[in-house]
Length: 272
Image 1 (spheres, helix red, strand yellow):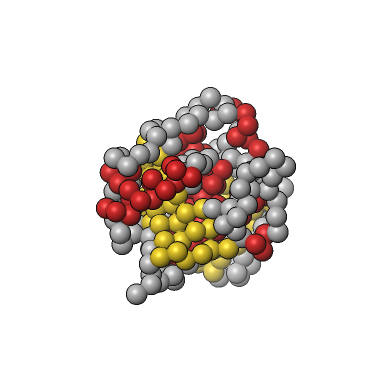
Image 2 (cartoon, one colour; image 1 turned 90 degrees about the vertical axis):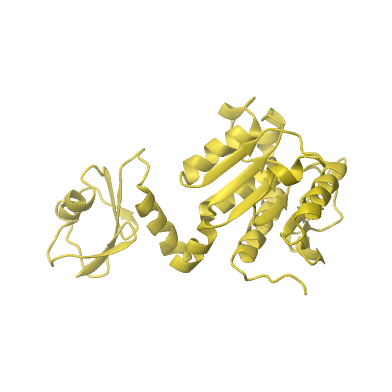
């Protein structure tokens, strides 16, 4: 009979128990999940054709090949293989940048280049992908740690510097998509112009208009040029009574990450 063990299809003799499969494939596993249900005891649980068995050793990092097999099983082998070869640069590791980076890491993008000069502050915790134990850490260091916890096989390059016209293109050399996730309008413009001047054929995804908690349907992706995209409603800026809130920031970050994936997979074509 055929079952899947940690997302890999295997052939076993009929009448085998979950405990016997654990002993064969992951002797050190202390958690056995059968068809989505954790088993109290695997000794008397017989396996059947088509069962899905997940064997977990708590606290242990799955081997690279097994981890990739599990990602490929969810995304499709072709999709995962394409994303693994790609690199995405993210300018800014705040609310937008930290969540976009985490999404791309979970999707299996092969390399992330993260640049930010700031540290994690208490006011960041309302919307950014950090926790109390990371207060005071450089954001790029904290983010790299969080990415490693989600996908230890993503290559992460961190640069703790303020971006300017002279270093942006150099820092993000070689990326396939550039995500702008900075705070100040002048910083945003300066980084995008500096990057696009050197790499005009690389897609750039900006963000504009994400403050408050307006309707999610107002968030959109606007194509502003051959390789320039802007995510947001293009209007809502930070003002009294309309700050940056987690839900809308997460929506924008998710839209940026999703668009980056579409570009990397060739599902979004540049204008002629």
